[in-house]
Amino acid sequence: MSLSAPAIRARKRSRGDAPLVMVTAYDEPSARYADAAGVDIILVGDSMANVVLGQTDTLHLSVEEMAHHVAAVAAAHPLAHVVADMPWMSYHVGWADAVRNAAVLVRSGAQSVKLEGGHERLEVVRALLDAEIPVMGHLGLTPQSVLAFGGFKVQAKSREAAKLLVEDALLLQEVGVYAIVIEGVPRLVGSEVTAALEIPTIGIGAGPDTDGQVLVFHDLLGMTSRKPARFVRQYAQVGEVITDAIGRYAADVRSGAFPREDESYSNPEELTH
Ligand code: KIV
Image (tube, rainbow, N blue to C red; front, side, top):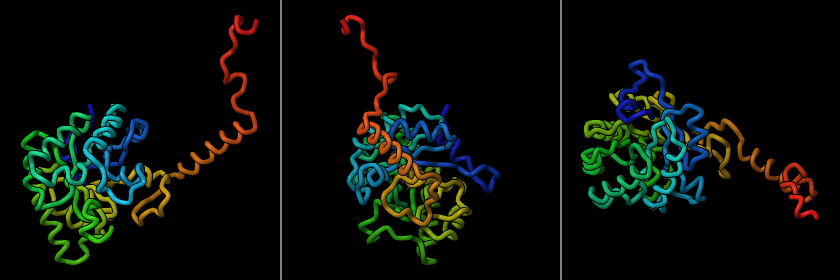
């Protein structure tokens, strides 16, 4: 039985629980590897636009594209909870539209959805919860706000902005989200918002005091072409392993060393006479 949204909601470090581990995945193999590693939550994130589709922002993904990848992740039958990002514009033009779009993601295999924003999203969050769809919040450096922010910039750097972020988090908690991602804020803000909430926070670039951490699959594994952000720790250089393996394959094809006899189907006698 995979980890449920209510089980995640109950996890709080201040109550002695272990930190939550979340990682993104976008297809069956990445979900399978992440699940085998024992993560708690797999996020089918719209960071897919950056790390899989080579785009510079997350504003061009459709619900259908997201659903396609949610289904691939669900095909791994992970024990981890699967949460799907609601793409930009899939929850901005009315709650009924948002509920229909979230239902597409749930029917594709998501157990909950994540959306960005605070006080301006309360009506939509309420409607999703009324439709029995668990919701994860996302505050701070919300990538879908890149045009409004004027770039991917650390947020909540002033006392006033930090206070507004905590207020937004409390509003989301009151409406009923089960956890909130806190992205790209000073570590003190990560710490303050975590202390203010009964529900867990999951940080990315929010310091060590949140109730969990999330990293993007390709960042963590060293599979991106850009310089990793300050908050990324690369646990492997899988990109180099892939290039090396494909390079050796290419060399073997060119030299005639691949395929060998034992890598070929033997000839039936009828063909040889
Ligand atoms: O899409 C994503 O990967 C995310 C994480 C950065 C939290 O939203």
